[in-house]
Length: 288
Image (cartoon, rainbow, N blue to C red; front, side):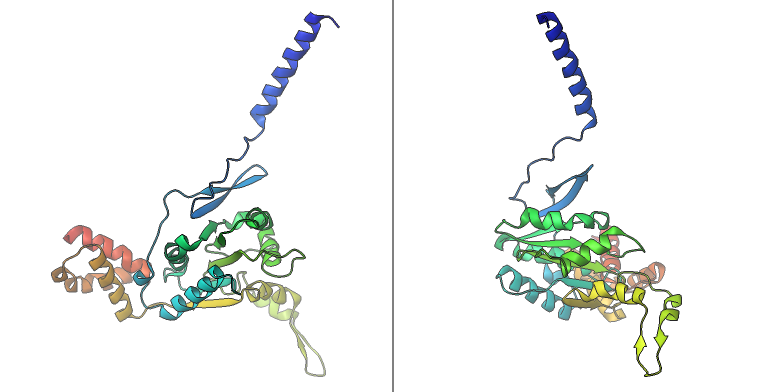
């Protein structure tokens, strides 16, 4: 091969490589371990922890009328930070009652003590084992946060989450916990037709259908269940008044907000902390 032919071959190879690089996804960025919160990102088959630069924080004292739930998750999180036994947590119940806010409040309270938060979308739960392995050697304590969790039939993330919680051959790592929120207690829909699978034997023993057992088994793998309920009217108004004070509304403008605050709940069809906060922002903007 002559020098000219060799040069031509090299040039063609470089053009082919350039075309291949255009189709290949770029390498994931380096992980910024100094961050307190991360999101699991995917590009093609590659995933990485993307640092969250602007974290939505909330203080524990801002969460009103869920004292039992606050005390339980605070105790569990402190045990986890202190490297004591702690449980994965499933928070279920009425929407807007502080489930997700409690997790953010834990990060705000204990981020300086090494607590870290990793937010994972339901569609990426199949990567949980990779996430656990990625942080296994880190000194920080990681909460994997799955918000608004529920599954439909056949979703792959269901099996992956179940294996990481309890049941996989590999350990989930002592520096990782899973905190999940859901409006559905058993995380999967249940149908009346499933009752037909129950078999009544002559000895009186009842064998539920295996489908029902499969659906219940995931939620049972969470060591702690915290239930959240709609607020009573007086509790809702307490939360409204709290946020009005936090937003700088003068005391003379707080009590007159009562009627409009109650009308707001009728229009929204819900009495919750989220609705109270939204009303307080609207009222404060008009009266401060």
